Amino acid sequence: MACINFLEVFTIERATLWKFGCMQHVTEQAGLLFGWLVLVLICMGFAVLGVISIELLARNCGGSGLPENKCFLNGSSLPGFFTIRTLTVRVVTSILANAAGFPVGREGPSVVIGSNVAYIISKDMLFAT
Image (cartoon, rainbow, N blue to C red; front, side, top):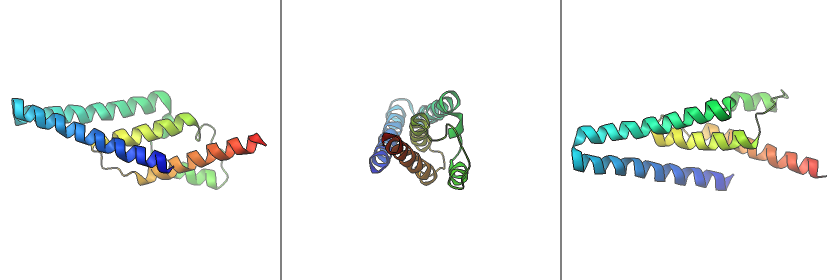
């Protein structure tokens, strides 16, 4: 989980630096209006990429996942919620949402990502015996 969290923070930082670097370059070359337009388009690109990955790959990653996590801990069956696919989509969309500048934190998805990792590891250990 620490490696996933490090990768997430590192990627968010790099994407944000790239986003503002592109804006700065365009602002210096073409003016403030075009720099602002580039910033908006990059943020829109991150957002659209996140929405497309949720809609096409794992629709159950459309929220924080905390209510579903609580349901699972209380004994409800949630087929397809803790898979490698949902883990990957949740990490990628958390990165994209933060890089796009949405007012979201990493804490809620990080709890569910940790639960997903723990479930996958324990499931593999359970079936290995």
